[in-house]
Length: 196
Ligand code: SF4
Image (cartoon, rainbow, N blue to C red):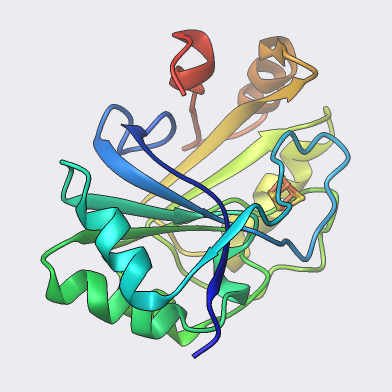
């Protein structure tokens, strides 16, 4: 099997959504199929690991929760084998996806967090998730949120403030939320509190 292309692996607390504050190991895969103009994530490959080495690395941390993120993890070849290996080791496994790939593996993980992007309104391919988070990158995002709610069944729907070059835009998030019912604010705790 091809090695996994990775950006970083680190232990932290989940900073967003329903699992905010949950200790977890974060595995950030390289590569993304979108190019959001405000993206602050470096998705360039920094190193590669085999399946066994990646499982060993994740297991070397204390938390038994792992968040597979990116980039776009559903594009990663070998993701089913990785998820199976993590489940065999007793991990709670979450995937953070932009929702553009309807990957069968999303049905086999413990938690799916989908963050569809208003800049790519026609790219939504999945129909369910545990939580949905939409970045309030502009006032018109409220209309996109309404479309998202029709397309993706989820338990929780969140609006996140947009972060442009370290400036967190709460005002637009608040304005977007005021136009919606059943959506909540998801603050990025790691940015507010200054942890990774
Ligand atoms: S989907 Fe996420 S990682 Fe990909 S470009 Fe958009 S913000 Fe960046």
